[in-house]
Each structure stands twice: as C-alpha cells, then as structure tokens.
Length: 301
Ligand code: MMA
Ligand code: CA
Image (cartoon, rainbow, N blue to C red; front, side):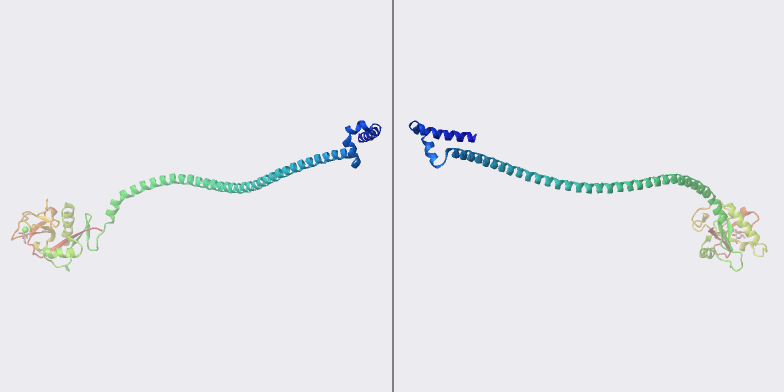
C-alpha cells in the first residue's frame, strides 16, 4: 500500500510538469514541502508518531495497570501474610487448647477412678454398718442381761473388815474381846466413829435376831452380871424423855424391849441390847454413864 501511495506521489509530480498553472494554486503546500522533506516520508512519520504515541499510551496504560496490579498484589500479599499469621496463632492456640483438653480429660479419668473407689468404700462401709448395728444390738442385750446380775453379784461380793460381821448388807463390830474395856455410851460411840462407823441402828428384826444370836454365843460363861452384859446401841431418849430416837434423828417406831422396859430407872436415857433367849425382848434402858460393851455398824464395801 505504501508502495502504491509512493507511485501515486510520483505520478502527481509528473502531472505538475504538464499542467503547472492549473495545479500551482491547488497543490502549492505539497510542492514547497517536497523541496525539504518528501510528502510520503512526512506521512509515514506522522503515522509512526501516531503509532508511537499510541504505543506510549498503551505502555502508560500498561504501566498504570501494572502499578495498580502490583499495589493490589502487595495488599493481597499483606492480607495473605496477616491471615497466615492469624492461622499460625490460631493453630498454636488450638494446640494449647487441645493440650489443656487432654490434661483435663486425664484428670477427669483419674477423678472418675477415685469416685469409683469411694463408691465401693461407701458400699463396703454401709454393709459393715449394718453388721455393726446388729452387733451393737446384741451387745446392748448382753449388757442388759449382765446388768440384771449386778445386784446379786454385788450382794455376794460384800465383805467386811476382819473382826467385823456381815449382817443384812451391813458390817457389825461387837466388843466381845476383853481387850476392849467396857465404857460409857458416848465413849463407845467415839470408838465406833474412830473406826469409820457409829453405834448400831437395830431397826429390823433380822438385825436384832442375828446380833442376839452372836451375843448369846459369846455369853457362855455367864460370870458377868446381867446388868453388865448389855451392848450399847445407837438409840437414846436424851432430848425428850420416852421419845426414843436413832442417831440420825429417826424416831423409834417399834423396838425389842424386855418386859417392863424402858423404865427410866434413876434416869436412863441410853439403850442397850442384852443376851436373851427371846430376841424380841433384848433391850433395856440404862444410865448413859454405865460401862457396857457396844456394837458398831458400818456399810459393807
Ligand atoms: C435392872 C432393871 C433395869 C435397869 C437396870 C439398871 C438389871 O435390870 O431395873 O430396868 O435398867 O437394872 O441396871
Ligand atoms: Ca431400865
């Protein structure tokens, strides 16, 4: 095509030689230019310039595009890096959480095992509690049975000091021996008190009977006169005549007086028991200053 245009330009030059007047006014710029720079070259140059300009525009556009693309790429890269970092952090957190979870699971397993052991222990204890309860009930019954024997055993175990005699759950001392000189009611009482006792309170027939028997046995020789053969007991009417009281202040309800006694013969305020075949008639009231034997009493240990 360029060749065609060039040929065309050459033909136009040939024509101008044939018809110079006609074409002079019409194509004057072409003629003047053709002196310096051929018209075809100029056109080509314009085309090239245009092409270059277009290329430059394209390159600029590409550059801008690349710039924008690169910028976007950099942003994306940053975003990718940030996401990678986050992912790494999340992975680390996940690993840590997994470790904690595993540890917790292990502890839970251990705890469950412990709980199981405790459960078995409780079962065992509950079973044993039942057995203990049965045992406790049996022991209670045994204790009650044994307790019921205590009074009998206690009674059989009661005993008195040497030379003291057990009568009706109490211990009695009778001054039979000659080493104990006869003495007044008060002196006799002092002796008893000195030995942790007091003059005898003969307030039951059982006591009177037993003491009377003992006195009768020891009064074999009968050398002693009847008035001297008495044994002081813890009974007086010293506060009020004919009102006989035991040592603790208890009034005498019924006594074992001999016939005609108490007669208060010459002021007799102290009572004594004497050797008698009939134990119901053992007592006489005598002057408290009389020297007689005596009977002490203390509770059995
Ligand atoms: C008689 C009798 C008693 C009296 C004493 C005093 C031997 O008995 O009279 O009542 O107490 O004597 O010794
Ligand atoms: Ca008398």
